Length: 250
Image (cartoon, rainbow, N blue to C red):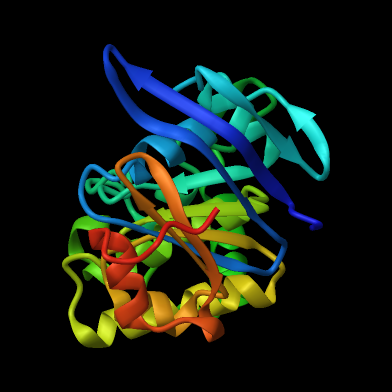
């Protein structure tokens, strides 16, 4: 099917609980895949396997049609898979460009001897990626703590794209945002799609899902119960799959 990233028949158990049961999903370049389901459906466990937080008990992963091992977050990052969780993992006491380079700070040698942070380079590069994604942040030297929720989400997305993400996983990206900021984040998702990024969104917001997703996967009690194109379904049908009122699609 030409998937950029594919998980085939992955399973994860915790003691006697099967959190993810023989699930297969895939996302293509420039495609937005939404994964929906009620609390406890297995969505978070699935993306944590893709991002290397958990190792699957069974199943396999493919990237660019080649089987790969994802057993640690560094394996996922090495492939170009970036994950933005709800907490965004931003340092609120640091400014915008410092967060884009957080953990990957660039340095230079002062007088050829002393290694210091290269603030000018990081500022310039951060400005470039924000302009590329058409993100408006008044001052890159502003601390993250002074930014709105939508701006923080934009910084987290910019960081991932700057470091060459090919697949971006977003966990509830519009949670706790106002309507105007939700729109900005969804516009960013559309921009990522135009840049050829494969995007996986975990969301409870049906409006967001139907606004940006190309395909929708529904999970229930650890299993995939639906995998459909957005244009071939509707909110009522998706909700029926979520609550178990619709027949499982294999």
